[in-house]
Image: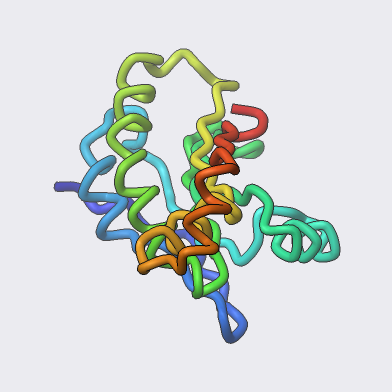
Length: 159
């Protein structure tokens, strides 16, 4: 297994964590030829504007976990792993581990010629919270509310 080198790992504020480390990502994607010169960037938030990002978290919206793109300077592939609030780290880790084989397949089928193709793996925080709540024993009132409210599934924006 080739370990994809880390370009940068931003220090996180208290209460945030990265869902996976470079070893886990490299274990699944390390042998993909399109990533032979890639680097992993660990980035604190998935939005440049902190206020937009905080609003997304407050609304329990959709956050990026992983982005595979090209560097605007070198043209080489880059992997960006984004942090999540620590309360969602287990759900984010499980979701990312489940999605990485699909990312691998997309990379292998697109070939080296696809310069603009971007691959995203996102997590809807509201869905993750709902799944976590379903894993504990619900009260009778919660069971009734769940049976009347379908769980919404949304795809990654810009996917």
